[in-house]
Length: 429
Ligand SMILES: Nc1ncnc2c1ncn2[C@@H]1O[C@H](COP(=O)(O)OP(=O)(O)OP(=O)(O)O)[C@@H](O)[C@H]1O
Image (cartoon, rainbow, N blue to C red; front, side, top):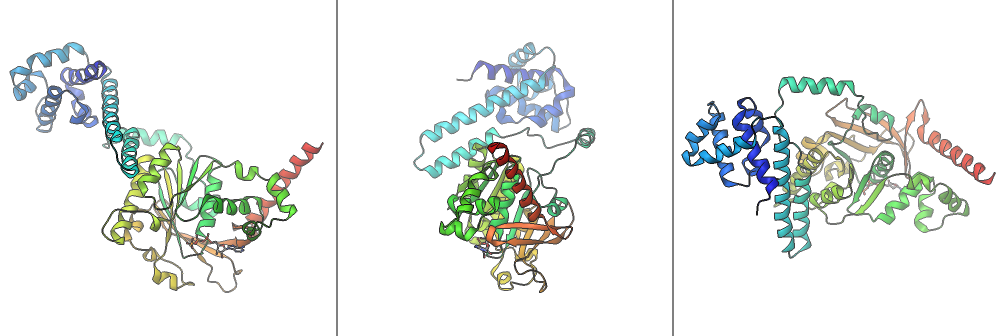
């Protein structure tokens, strides 16, 4: 049974269409035939679209000409409900809300009959998409474009920080971007991504989806990184008394970040999207892309689809997606060579879809400290390419950039130590 609120909204939308010819174009661009649950109103709407696209006037007379005299009463009824078109966008919003509810109920019925959790996850994913559907119009006139331009220019834009100044000054990442962090095995992708995720988690909720590493192992790395504790001793469960003490007093360095670790072996993009929407994560890290389950006959087709889906997930849902990626085997054999975009494994689609591609690799410079890495910006839609050096302290899983010849990490550690010393003095006073 169709509810009264739905009926009213649908009649009102058609009524507005009939009484004000000036809104017909915009009204059509904001609606679809499927928004109408009443078949007769859908027929009227489709007639209006046909007339409009044929360049003919849209009113009660021309529509009756298309639909037939038997629609007379219905057209009069619609116009009776809405003597003026004032508030027509509110009626559209009400009608589309009802459409959403209808589609969700239909999904709920299907959900009641599923036989596997995979089917359920697929349906829940579709429900998430219905719920996050925004205004459908994608057409923007020059007047609207310029109005938006001035509004945006008047507001200060805040980009998402990776915690590395030189990278932040190049990338200008925002929600809706798809960023790839690529490297050879053991380059330190996971370590760098975790450090970035913990940094971003100080501002908003971040999900870190690992397809191969358990949350417990990731926590070991996080504690090493945030509390500057020997990673090998953490792994062997042989922390010294001093390290126990430090982990206890510095625990806020870990807990103050809104980071959620998700163990995701065998997951696909849809599983991640469903979880990210349910947990309200605005930033998602995926470790790593080639491990994701994908649709397609061969690996090439699967990775192509995964890349497309990640791009859509970022854009449609306003999530910053940072996916880690392996380089191809050919590139992996050239350990000292600077990577290029063609080294991305299995699919050129990743190169096409990504807003930015970063490559992490061992610094080939013979004079550089042994553990130094290079972070190269291979693709950057919003800014410059280039590369810079990072020191990697594997013992603490800590990456730091060189700022004015000094390591930013040293300054960070000194700052944190000072703040905790101050805290301890206050507590013991
Ligand atoms: N106790 C330690 N002391 C020094 N370095 C360490 C220690 N433990 C691990 N490492 C180094 O830390 C790095 C961790 O790399 P990480 O796992 O982040 O790389 P990755 O690029 O994600 O690799 P993969 O693709 O294989 O997962 C490795 O280079 C490893 O050699």
